Image 1 (tube, rainbow over the protein chains, first blue to last red):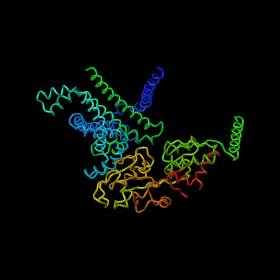
Image 2: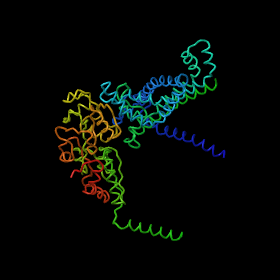
Image 3: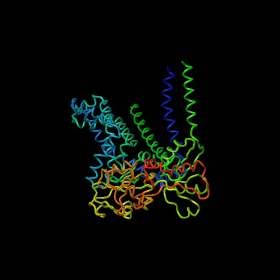
Image 4: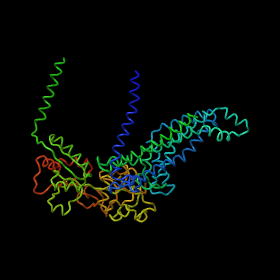
Amino acid sequence: MQLLFTLCGLAAVGFVLLITVYLVISGIPAIQKIGLFNFLFGETWAASQDQYGILPLILTSVYGTAGAVVIGVPIGFFTAVFLAKVAPKKVANVIRPAISLLAGIPSVVYGLVGMCVLVPALRDWLQLPAGDSLLAAIIVLAVMILPSIISLSETALEAVPKEYEEASLALGATKLETYFRICAPAAKSGIAAAVVLGIGRAIGEAMAIMMVAGNVANMPSLTRSVRFLTTGISIELNYSQDGSLQRQALFSIGLVLFLFIMMINAFLNLILKREKER
Amino acid sequence: MKKIFSLMLAAVMATSMLGGCSENQKGGTVNTDGSTSMADVMGALTEAFKEKEPDITVNYSGTGSGSGISGVLDGTCDIGLSSRELKDEEIAQGAVAHIVALDGVAVVVNPNNAVSDLTLEQIADIFTGKISNWSQLGGADAPIAIYGREDGSGTRSAFEEIVGVEGACVYTNEYGSTGDVIGNVASNENAIGYASLSAVSDKVSAVKVGGVAPSESTVKDGSYTIQRPFVMVTKEGTALSEAAQAFLDFAMSAEAEEYIIAAGAVCPN
């Protein structure tokens, strides 16, 4: 019986190793041919002209994720405070399932709503030719990362011992002061974990932003069409020929994305470990 | 019971072998090499040909029109595939063109767009960003959104090649499929895009180019200019293998017409 469990555990590790090894093996050749510097810092991605620079893609992914965090984290954090501390029980019991539902919506549906509602709205509002833009992608990503930020932050806030709060109130602090100066700092590593998890989800998302970002490999600008690391792979995979430099370069993008996500995960583990040690 | 079953199985297998033998067969391999844009047409043709001549294997490798033509001239493949007309120097070296299909690329705009007729130069100017507002073309005062396909798409390379804007297009958005381009042009009044003629539906309107509306007949008679031939190239004086000749004959026959149309191209005959 123990053997079975061990095998199951090993299978999971095996898949991770398999994917890692595959990505490294298939991602390295193109980087060797293009040159690491040209690949990472080249400003033009145009397969037909043999130019494979992914700086626009990297910057777009970074800016897009950062933008989503800037919008999503404050909203998520305040919602968590509201749910954990302020909201009457009945109200919280309506909002909480709604948030879980938000987490369960498939990303293609986010993309669809973004494409049919958000993009035309941005087009009219900002007088853009098309409306597909980094801004649209940021808004969609911000909504997508809300559920994980809210639920993790709320759990962290609720884990703060009741005595802290009572002591603060007894010393004459107002309720708001107590929430933001006592509860939030006490829950900070949990909230940080929530933010990092949100970053991880945002940087790895492909489907939803492919439908609203426009997918031209421009240097990122809020109102122009942009291409993320993830969408860069998915949009060109179909027509790139097997074995061509273009196909190999797409795997290299995958490798870069993989490294990004590994770093984010390592960071998350660090935060969680520190919390445990305290 | 088991015995009867195995007997029946043997009988079925024997009859299927007979079926395979009944036609007079030609065996062999045909190596074709060239245009990536012809992948769909070649796919449809080889699949149909496989049913007709199951013993002939047709290999296709997409390397580009130029290398397909030089391949057949050097004798490294049986039939070269080109999605452009042969150049004079290629003909001088003995390349012979057999046009199997024509490919028309329609330039599409939103049905609410007042602009319905553009010249090739205007189209080039739009796609390179020199013209950026519809009012410059007699339309509404609105910015132009340029929709195209991703790098590597056959439609994109065909369009850019014929209009003469290779690598110079300033796209607003890029999409991964023809359907996406059509759908997004249909939902944005500012948009212009291109799509294979066969994919154009009434959700979008195809503009006239130099006064000629794209259709099967205008592509056929050559008056619609954004088109290119799909050519099978052989070498003069070099006899094709029996298998290669059979495939070429099939591709040029009236029988192949429905497969070529199904693959989204126009028949030249």
